[in-house]
Length: 161
Image (tube, rainbow, N blue to C red; front, side, top):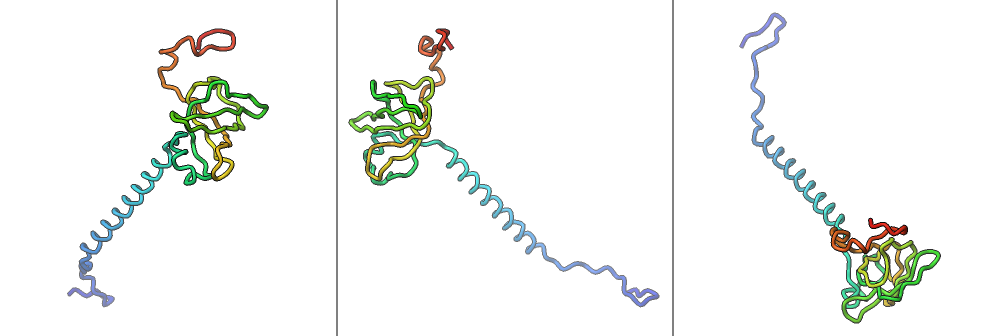
């Protein structure tokens, strides 16, 4: 053991062996981070999906839906559309005998009319009633809508879009 002039021992000392403890701690931290990221991603993906309920599905579980905000899908009944100063009213029907009276507080899209499928975003006005208070109307169509039916999409000046 070499001692210096000042009386200090300068012999190198090995640090205590803690490899197992460090490895275990690193593994635990990595697992927690991976689980947290997995949870955040799964919740983000689940909440970013836009689900809707059909009129028939809501009819089967009307009390469970209550007044919660939903996306209601159905076909606009022909001849039921009435334009109002704040939007429109219409009857949204399912594939069966179920239907809902929709009061829309937003202007419908240009393609909106009778006999087309739409998704209305909103809530029922009462827990068991069938009047649907709507804040947004989305017209359902496929990406090849224009190509398959070029004469259906026309501008007000008569040109095809």
